[in-house]
Length: 178
Image (cartoon, rainbow, N blue to C red; front, side, top):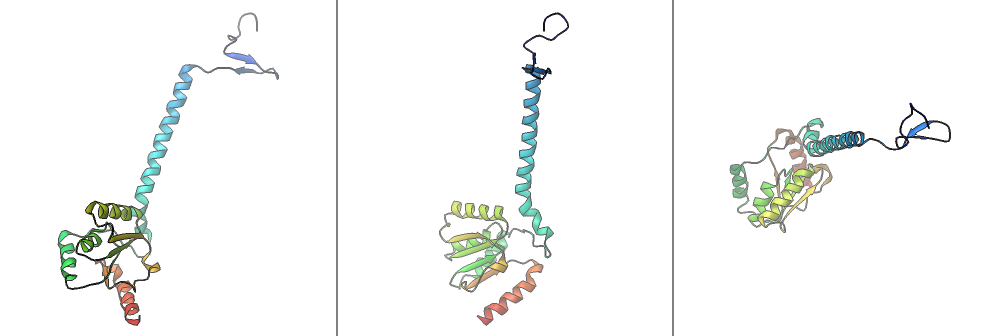
């Protein structure tokens, strides 16, 4: 491309088909492009993280029977431990939430197991059991209560949501029949 009016040779190059193609992009154009990718990546990563954290807490509200996570108070935990004072055997907490009751029972000498649907709460419970030094006698599992057999447990704990009343009656009948 000799003569005036054309672009400089380092910017444009003629291809075999006769079209003029750019051979290099300006530094400013590359900078804008990388900031766009970075911004898109940060927004996308943030949305995925929010979805991953929020989903286990929001999905219970979408079930036919809503069973929310309601943490046990210190007084409630003391009452459970007091009720277990003269009892022996293994213990299961159905819907163990953050594991406070299972950990307290393990500290009181029970082999305690907690079942919970929310994986974040199960992982947090396992961490708390490890931190409290009872991870050997307190176990936590991600499981639906309808898919677990409770016959091997001597003590069953279900904490006070009214939606569990029908299920509790069914469990009592099953334990009486076993």
